[in-house]
Amino acid sequence: MRRLLLSIILLTTLTLSAQQYHHFPIKDASKEHVRILFAGDAMQHSIQFKWAWDPTTRSYNYEPNFRYLQPYLEQAEVNIVNVETTFPGSKYSGYPQFRSPDDFFHAMLEAGFNVFALANNHINDSGQKGLMRTLKLIKPHPTMGAYLNASEREQQYPIILHVDGLKIALFNTTYGTNQIPPVAPNIINYIETEQIEMDIAKSLKDSTIDLRIMYIHWGSEYELKHNSYQKGLAQWLVDLGFDVIIGSHPHVVQDQDTITAADGRQVPVVYSLGNLVSNQRWENSNGGVMLLLDINRETKQLDLQFVPYYVHKGRLAGEGDPRHQNTANYYCIPTFDYINGRLPFVLDETAVSELETFHQNTVERLNLE
Image (cartoon, rainbow, N blue to C red):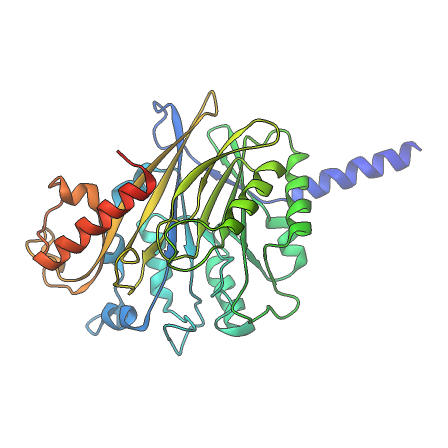
């Protein structure tokens, strides 16, 4: 009996030690909170990589995309983004099957993104070979949602973040992969209730976890308000034990909500963050929001803030950095910063109108002050 008990304890220890943990240092020890930033869909339509090409360096320059978001990324301990493309290494393409240059991923890294969500409907756009190369490129960094095999998923999911004494579990699932299923032994996290129940049950056994966050790919494209399926699924997830739910996929910013769990917890739900960067130029899709989730280091209380940004396609007149004075590219422009005159450039009349419209629509939809 003693040998059996010892074997069980040893097996449990080995299983727990196999789980990967990711440590993120606190950036300012005087702060009362830890900040986790969430961004929406990082997309690459074909015109984006054509514009990013620099014939002088023979590489793709995506630094302008994230230049004015970088101050917000620098303030957060953890920066999470939904990577809605693949990196097959060649034969790049945009919609409907996204295949992007590696430089796009490297630009996200350099901007400050350090956790990558992969469970989305485009992660299989390059087939098995492309998925495996994408994983090889990204896997040196914390990722969630797609895996080489079941063993890797068991070790790496959910992501466990350690930030200044806080322990946070991150989950990531998608409604589908555009009818391109993964080829065994590869695994992609789908919204499968039985699997999600097992995943959260595994997490709940660890009483040291302070927060469980679901970043979920769901909803109907271009609908400005969540639908009944999202509402019902959010309630189910909250009752299971999730503490925050954040959505992507609709390519517009949707509304936010607070849902009461069966145990009385008040759980914030942000139904869709919209696009991070894309070539979708129409109203409400030409921008997105970053969610700043502040977690009090002592009380664990949550505070949500939003940073709306408009994606400008073109040049920036009077931009302060002479190296990129005349660079035509895609620029994510925080709307509060631009409207309040905190940025070193002037947009043309059409762009200002689009930015102000996006800002007003988003502020009203999220009930921001």
